[in-house]
Figure 1 (tube, rainbow, N blue to C red):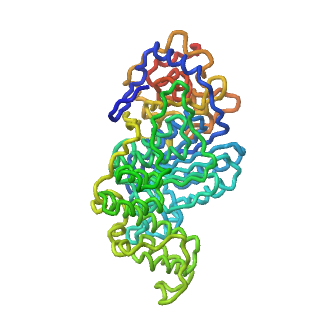
Figure 2 (spheres, helix red, strand yellow):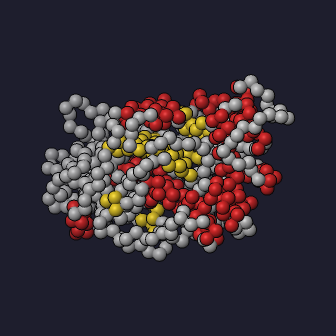
Figure 3 (cartoon, rainbow, N blue to C red):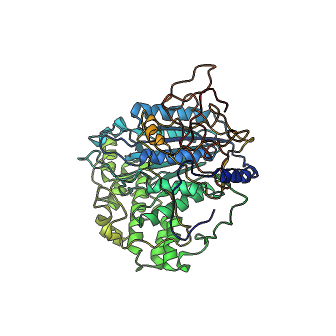
Length: 564
């Protein structure tokens, strides 16, 4: 697949691929070897319809990521717009499912919507959450540690947790909460990622798909890339696309990091990128030095940049990034200590910091004095105190309830990352809004980028579809072209309607349970998952991410009683 020098926008109409091209691509796919992937489970939730302010893209983003995870061989559980009871039930059942998966299992969790931090813990908000006061956070939201901690204690191969949920909100208006998400230290065998750096939020977005989800979808579909490097590339891509306004964060303790999709044998050689971690930052030109600091995303890396380029156009921005990260890490250490001395030390370093109210709440619980005494033994953090310039200017960094890096005080937008390939973003019309908690899957599948799917004909079974598409999509589908299926049906060995890759399996969100002994059947009025183009190195027609199945959008519906 060739790439133009400019940004590439994928615009593929369902069913528009000629049959000759389909079978030519199929011939190349059959020759590809299948990687061994083991047991893969994923939970994908998108919360859009918040009563206090919808998140336009959250459910669509979740559907996009769910589709990519299916292509990578994950058995995906997906849902949208859950209330608190439904959210807790879905998380609990997934943890139980992961516990039964065995030690070779890889678990992937993606949550999109609104999350918030309170006293050092991260909480995910269901759609009906109101939260008039800070004390209501534990009552009206779901504390993620209640579910991630049991996962961390299971003998799993790898755990990947993605929170695409650091957004501004109007919760607790009279008792401001610290913005964004709280920095956490993942346990061994886990990677955790946020759509925005700890203590910051993503800019408001109104489009059908968010920048972070699109960058994650793009980088996950590049074959042969370990998942920790995927998130490094996501950070660079999002910072590039938002002109520095949003900087994702991740921390990995995976050893080794799994590869989600193997690289196709016929793929062109990957574009050589400089190793931005092998040389001191001062050895790079300033533009590349900024990219190196951003890829490393550590306090030491940002300090090294400022030491080498104290007066560069990007130094003010790096100082802001460094100030927010230093404060978030200091608060994490204070919360881990959970003593009066730890909170007094935090307040001495950050008297107007975003966690000052959290520190005072903890001091009240500990029945300690609110103000630090004139003399006390300061808590020993492994984080150096902020320099004098940061102490003097901390009002610049923390003067608003939420830190977003698009503030003009942070200097001009950073440079484009020259070694990144041109972005390949999903630019299709959005699916209809979710109905009955069903995840809205993309109408047209995004392409694989030089990748071999983990699902292979005759070697692996495709996981059950996330669910049937919601009924509201039927009118849209009816208006699209419906070319006939190929003569003689689909290639031998592909899934038949009602089998894997066909109708939804029992237990999918929003579907009626299947009767014992009854064949799997699609729910009345619910069209199946959207169709996808077939490309070299992509899945076979009829498999996840391949050509549409009978009855899918873009194909003539199968007549009752006709052979599959």
